[in-house]
Length: 326
Image 1 (cartoon, rainbow, N blue to C red):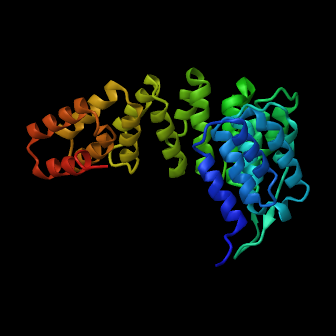
Image 2: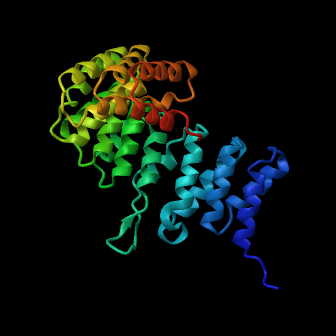
Image 3: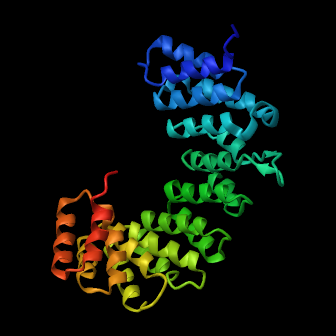
């Protein structure tokens, strides 16, 4: 009978420890797995330590990270373990800058079917978030180059780090990033969301400038960020955009954004559209409102509006969007 693979056995055991009580024996067992030769085992051990919040293992996780980084392309394919280790350090509030500084500068090109792929982009992103939480005096200066990193994932990590832990200076850098642009609308979307979360009073007007951008991806990102901010001032911007956007392809995006604001005025407006707007607009409003299908109050209001309208096709659409089982 063939022997079971030792890596598979270790991964299976870590799966069992995932739900274990954090006893000394469990801690010692995970400590041993953090020293394993397999990067996959080390990655899962770090994840389990993070989920169990075992602070006693922080030194072992730092040691494992440093060991792998001595020759990461050979020891840690796809940065599987180093990324998981730094994620654990960050989420467990490790505030010494050394590992984050090392991860921030790491590039790891690995072969693929096309050009080599940089597998360290997510590692750099997590490093930026961790470094900005430390008291390292040059943290902002170290993270800044990541805003123009070749990899979108790394740029998004820098944006999220600056939004979460960059303070007022971080918000200004996010504005600068928006003003200088990015080839990926998703990066600018994170900038918009970060600005609206960290500096809402000052940022609504700034983000509103981009809802009429020539690039539809940027305009959509700004519209959705305004909706998700759940700010009354942001909803006012969306309503004004709606009123002057007859025939615009952005109207459906505007409905989704207004629904995601979760403001009573926005919900009431969308319900009024289900009763009084054109059939296409009413159908799109029903779809946007379907995020509230578990709310009896909203469901009842939409049902009442559609009953008053008497359009059987829209009533069928409501049944499909609101009454389906998840």
